[in-house]
Length: 116
Image (cartoon, rainbow, N blue to C red; front, side, top):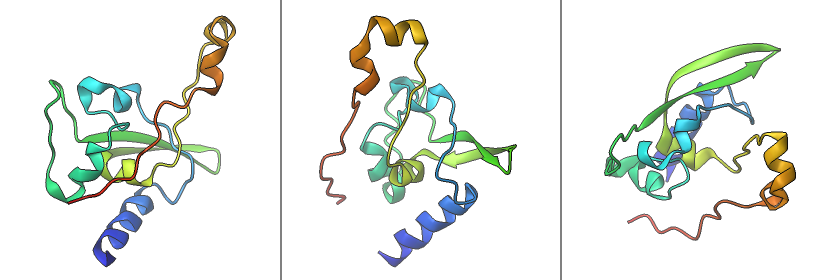
């Protein structure tokens, strides 16, 4: 558990401990190994499953720091998944109006996960 905590802190430090980051849409696409899959948590120390056709284990990220943008070239999706509490998708206004239910949709609740 100490190693996991230490590794999570190291990855969070790569984000300069920001509570809000921006990632490319491909980070949540199923074909690229979506961040929304609990399988990412199993990959922290167990290797990547990578069964998706265009699987990518890392992603880039953008953070805002004192009004300036900072690009992180490579960030592990597994650790990012573990550090993520919430994802927010920006919807086009016309889609938000025509499909009001999307405004309050919860895409995924992580069930209790047992990492073996």
